[in-house]
Length: 399
Image 1 (cartoon, rainbow, N blue to C red):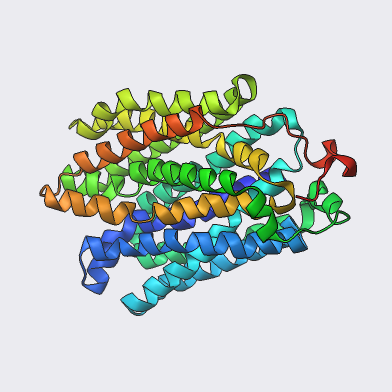
Image 2 (spheres, rainbow, N blue to C red; image 1 turned 30 degrees about the vertical axis):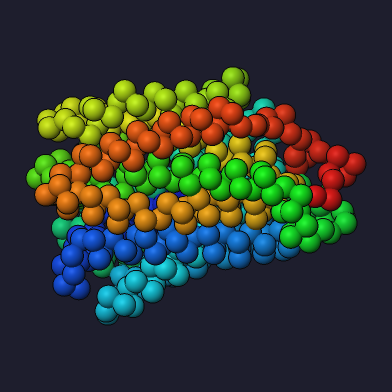
């Protein structure tokens, strides 16, 4: 189950990050500028909230396992069709629909995972699950570095259909969440009533995830092509090596801080990671040497994804149990919705400064690091919550 959830998010991220590497090539193909092409990224992020709600509700009603399989099949098909898009309009529509499919996978996969593993595992499994995101970025980096010169951007999108094969593994090896099975015998409460009872928590979680999505997308989306290629003029091979380096840092950071959160608490681990990113910003955004930029990028993503590594456990523990298939994914993707303008914003700022993107990168990263530290530092956590096989029907309230 852990393997399936990790691979599901890895392959979902792989399909998303292909776009990050090729949006300048897409722009050339359809005869538009970088800012217009970056709208494809924005559309994907905007529509992820829609997918989180649709597939989350389906997962709460029909189970996590079948909905996760449907998610994977759908985003794989849409990735394939993106590579075959004949016009810019068709491409944009397909990327928006891809966002719907992508939006459902994280919430459903994380609830399945957190409801199944023992409580003492949640920290490091959370870090492992979130490490799937930079793992997918790493795979996209390798595919771009190795395959792009031969198959172009359309070929990369076609390769992105391969995650559909994961469904075979899930169908044969992954059990349904025991927590979901137990809740089928409990009284049903309308989702509107549950959200009304937890309105404060919902608003807080959405704002927190908006900051988190600015933190990740603000340090990733325009970094390889706008910052490394356009601003610094680095070669294809240099960009690939730097991207591989910072994705390794991201994976290690997620595992490190996810595991640390099991010992010192979710809030402390997140605050430490967020604040440690601040002294890295000058090295990461204002260096000129590829060696120094690579070091800065490694450290920055270690901290950014370190903070993110705690989120799967943290959101699922805060979630009302009856809508755990819906709540984590929806608040995550609503935060994504509110942060979806990031790539377009940063490219516009960079264009204003004559294609110097350092200020756009540093401004976003520094601001949201402080915001995250404050929101989480004064927030709440529920690290000792009992779920899945460790809970009984008596400990599962209807809300």
